[in-house]
Length: 134
Ligand code: SF4
Image 1 (cartoon, protein in one colour):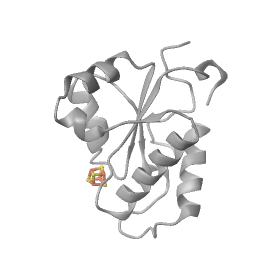
Image 2 (cartoon, protein in one colour):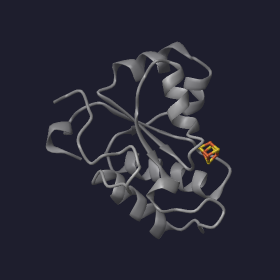
Image 3 (spheres, protein in one colour):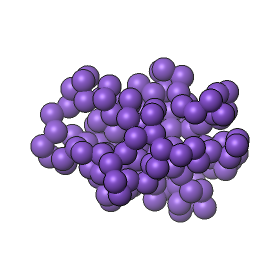
């Protein structure tokens, strides 16, 4: 996390898909939440257009989506309500859908990459802070 983001309101959404990369996305989001990097919240509530969740997304300093694959379900849920998240897509960070055994090690590595803003070329996380607090 960049220094400027300390104490800011960061919401984390995961696609939580049924595939291996979807599970890794979910577990990574939970890990980041438990570590205090941001607060994991409910993507399904965004899809259901529940007012309190829409308001929280619109008020956040940064909405961060973690998707397993380029279908980008989490990112698109946010875009459908007019919110542009900072998007991480695990297959653009080196994971292969259907061929990535889920392990604590891969979850830790993925969380570290997201925390340091590192993605492979072509990923939407640029390493530059994109929050609205600076
Ligand atoms: S982004 Fe990919 S892995 Fe995640 S729910 Fe959508 S299709 Fe499944």
